[in-house]
Image (spheres, rainbow, N blue to C red):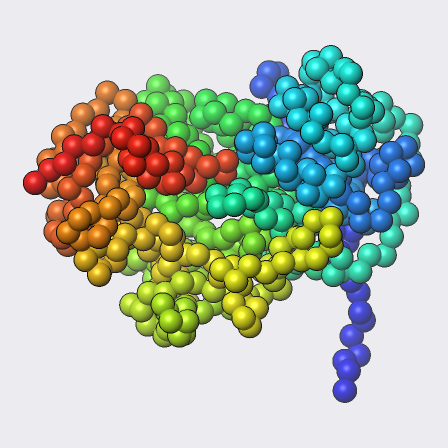
Length: 554
């Protein structure tokens, strides 16, 4: 028999309506870099979203599920697009401004974007691409910038504020099927061309509910959330939609992502929760230490920071807590998982030092994410905390295919989806009986030495616990005797020194001696991808090409 419950679609439109009414006085606060930040309420944001929808539909001719791209920083205008575009039935396509030009060009063409909303400060990035973007008919520029770089192109150029001026502050939002596309985000293309992941209204709604749950970030109307993670990076980990649903105000950093401005906005606006990749928090920790030494007020409002994107060194987590009273919460996810797959909150009753063996994991799976481990032969491994295999997941906000582009056919590469439809994450790890995930490596980064696996992540975390080391990346390199051995590359803190023998001895006290690298190199910075992850393929190529000054110890 069927239930007697009402069948109400779970859509971004409902998040928009709820945020602008029930939480209408919550604020979107955009940092401007000078003077007072720009403030507008959720109610005002909703009204501007309605005006944007009218402009896109009536003036620019956006119809159906056409893609509307954004090339923007985290700010109030970007949030208006986040809400208006899906709610009117179109598809929000966030463009990663840190991708190489050729990848950005390929992505816009693959998605067939007709309209691009762009911050004026990013026009020098967009303008050179336009001759290779024949599908783009309209460019809408928000904020100051040199618009002369767009002259001579075929696309019509509009000013965002002029386009919205005089339009109605309400919109007859269509009743959209919750399974329809709401947003499109491409992977960073570390292997092959980037792949498009299409989020449904339903998946965004359910993901927002999870973000707001106590199992995840527990946002409420008493919070001010600081999403440093870009809105083009998996929807800023779901924070914009979740905050609008919960009534948590948003502090948007715009383009001011350096440690100094971040510390200043934290002291001024006093957010309660922040989210970013480890490299951002490493820089901010040094800035907060310096300000504390100089007698600054400090980040007393900021109680929690979420770290994801790559494994967080335990030393960084402990330094934030010991020196500034900020609790670091580890999370795991990827573009294909919307992104939250697990969050590392310790179980009930675990306190003190016992917490750390849970907090340093990638976390526990929520009810909506099913997980399993696949062995080398495809066999499913037990959740015993010891058996390591490739992580596979499925659930209502997990991708089941990639966007196929103009031909309309979605595709499922064998290396990314199992025959029964589970997402193959490419991450290798273990799961405890009570559902805590510990990742030991990416499948392509694990070091296979003499038939045994060495975790590059474990070596990196231990190295970054050394007081002289700012960053460390470990990669596999060929070895005649063992097949592969680890190469440790380290970035030393400013003014610090540490010899290779000292670092080797430091590691030897923490891991099995056979895992300690023989090959070492000091580098100025670890290469990073467009989303802030260590780009280990660059290091491997540098080593193969002889571009690293490597010392080999006995």
